[in-house]
Amino acid sequence: MKWFLVAVTVVTTVLSDLLQSYEMKRSGEQSMGARGLARMTKLLVGRLYLVLSIVFLAISFFAFLALVQREPLSFAVPASASSFVLEIALAKLALGERLGRRRTAGALLVVAGICLLGKG
Image (cartoon, rainbow, N blue to C red):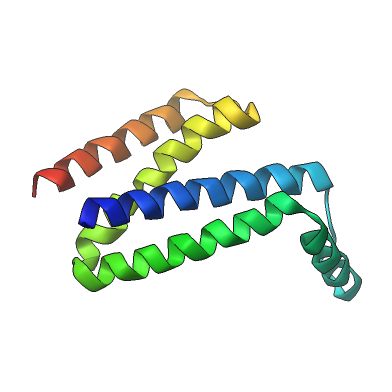
């Protein structure tokens, strides 16, 4: 059950972040004053990917709550960090972002840490 909750947390976090990034880049820069907040609210309502992003974020939140209810926080937080690895890979593949050597090396270190956690 713990790995199922980790997987749900990771996958929904990744989907939320990717959809949010895609939609916000598509919409352009927004100001965050009083008018900017009103525009952002209108933007939110009219953008399907942004609404889906919020839905996935809510699912991720509740899956993480269930995970920390069953497992120690010292396991849950690092295990859910695998979302970073997936996000980096999908940011390159889906969003066309560039990855440097340092970012790739950091992602590989996260993978190594997750593997060590899985053994415990």
